[in-house]
Image (cartoon, rainbow, N blue to C red; front, top):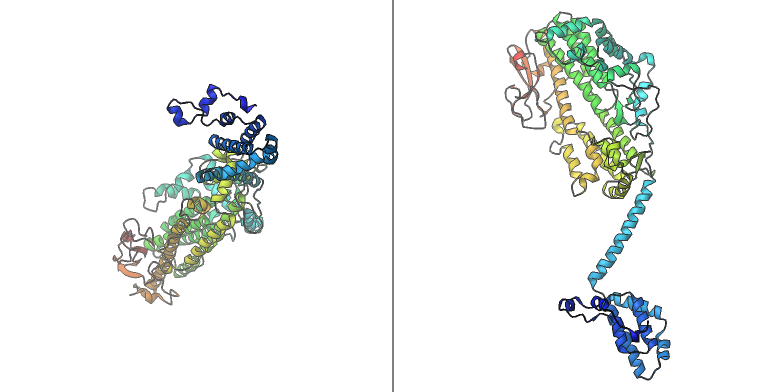
Length: 616
């Protein structure tokens, strides 16, 4: 273009007019640098050089105007000094290089806010690119199932010869009793719906069921006496044998079908199916039959049923999970109640040597609560290895694909019970892939998650090895988990802890209640033996040691001596309860046991033993 002949159009004049002048109606094209060059009337070659340099600078309009004015002034000064246009162009140098130098200089002089904005969005673009690249890189890593924890759990059962396993005998007895989950409402289901005692309204129907199934109950007792349960745990995906389906209510159409290898929880402990409900049913049946036998004066059968209940309790403990141990303890609690009821209503049913054997049997049957920590750790690390990668040094990040068609976010939602993987919003691969890097920034790494878990579990395990009165009850375990979750992202950071950390505060209370009730049983048996020998109750519990008790148990809540009194010529042994206030043996309003030994909310005492009917 010939700058000397430059003539702007009306639109160009409007475009290059400052806004303030436009508002005044003045279209002076004051920012039109081409116009300024034309008005300078430089020689054509110089004018064209200025146009080319300014055009190549790619600056703002006002900056281009300033550059144009500066270059025009430069060349005008040279012409006035007597230098020719060719000479001026020769000394000016390469036009492209000059435009680049001018651009850099002008950009450096721009306001600081422009530099912040300019480099800010450049940084954002770089971060976005890095984010995408990181997500793509992470998407290629998959978890590695290095330990088959289900196989570890089943080692004990599989090591037992098939002929020595108690489970087949349990299965036969329970099916003979009618505990078929596939048949809906049955007489067995109605039997389990009530825990009546002799004299209760529902007892006649209970007694009829027991008498009608005497042979099956005898098989149940024999199964309970077996040394090992021998149940090989399976997952929901793997299915059950045909006969086990009836007990578990599982309907697997094709028993020969291969497992669903696309499931991220295939062979996972979270999918394991255990016969705990069936063992509870066995314990409840034996309890009722023990009371039936006692009411009929059959002390031998009542005694055998109690021993069988302890056998069922022992079998329930073969898998090291807290749920298994709680099932075991629940069965033992029913057995303790049977002993109490027998001594209250039929005090002469059992001979002294039988009472001693009962005491020894319960003493050797205490639930090993520490085994539960072993199982909980296996459960936690089994989930960890299915959602995290493994760098071989104990660390890793959230993987993307945890199965061929399931990503980690689908699995997380499934673990939380929100939805099956197929219904998750994250079934959209693009959304899941874009979320992955952010999730790995916010969520703790494999090592950090494991370290936090071990710290909490180690402290809890050490605390729960102590008697309740020596434990630090001012620092509940659940509050320590919440303490790790402080901050805007704390809950997400340790999400797996919140999801999988066991309810140890409730467990601590249950252990204390269990131990207290066991103490009450031992004291009650010792009191009965003392009474049979001396024909009167002892003046204090200390009189029971060492002949009937190795040592006198203490209050599980306070660590101090238990309270003891005689009510209607029956012994009453109690703890002062969670409020540490002696209420004279008056039970709490809710129950004869405190709901929480670590809480002072319930007024009253905790009755751990009595055969005085109106007191319990």
